[in-house]
Image (cartoon, rainbow over all chains, first blue to last red; front, side):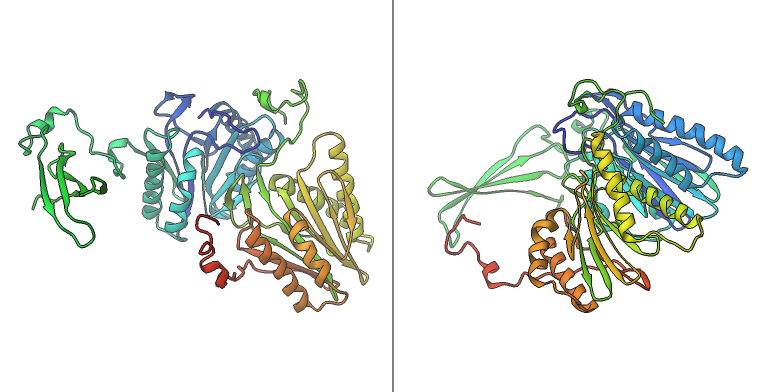
Length: 289
Length: 245
């Protein structure tokens, strides 16, 4: 979660994707599991969703050290507060303690956090605490460097009052999309669901996540492909046809059997005019028939 | 509650200040606030955006807040510093109320308090990174003032912060007059806010208007402004000069 500093005056979101959403009855917190030091992945299975109390959890992004020490202090203070109060602390108190540390040490800390939990007074609540120590209660919030890829996604799919299942699926899908595009996010998706009945941790390893654009089904070995239906897995078929069209003639259309490792080959068409200019190239994925 | 320095060497622009605190640059910022005096009191307008650098990250940030019975404050700049200012102001009002002497702080006093706070922080090279607008009515007297992050303060019939200084104030200089009605005042503010929406990159189309009169404070529900794009000049702007913009 260590960022590489660029322009001093632009706020920089750090490695990680973290999400908190409210639903009808509680909250779902989600995060990826990659901790990086520069280009090296120091921990590929980190747990960025940290417990503060029985009913309040914290998603951490940015500097691993800074976010860990903030969560340690807040956990300590909340523990004392719970004893003195005689009942579970509210999410608002937890969030404001995080804010105090973040705001009063804003020059030294580099961590954006999401506080989420459930208490009997307000139900499920999510608080975003970005760099600088602003505190904002929101129906959902996203953070970390991977979150930049999710603003449009959430603008489109977010709706109030989802069920627990809808909310969990949304969070997993979102973190998975961010992992696909953000180099600083990766690994597994972890979620923590908090409601009146308690806390549930879920774990989604990479192979349970959906595949996105240009991602391929993982295989044990290329050798598995050789024994499948395609007769010439490494070969190319090519053919050309002379065509005419209203606009430019004559034209030649070449098709090559490209990306032939899958059973449904993709054909690459190049269209070349009389003057020799290649005017159109497009690829078409064919179904078997 | 200071933690051990976790080394942000880049922030030390003036030698070693491991111990001293200073806000060097803002993170989550609000844009312009515009305020005018009108017949019955003061009107303030601000959008609800919280930008994070160039990203329009938060779209429901309340930048207009009541202060006691007689004032309203609008803030641009770093939101976390504004939240801290609100804590100071709420404490100020609380202690004022605790005197229980029938007196209450008016807008002029609150403006002065803010000015001292901003200027003293500036002198310590640790500013609260905000530009504030403070308006109110007490005993029939209308008051509208502004304070910047370095402590520059003044009062006027119409004020603005940020981009509003450049885009709204010329409109207000031209079209403001004494004894605007509420409707005229709102329309004038909306004219300013629309221009800001067109021309300020950090503006978002969700705003609130706050009104304060002798009777009290009202802050409107969030709403959005219609914009006009249907100008013939917009339809084919580069027809005469391809490649231009």
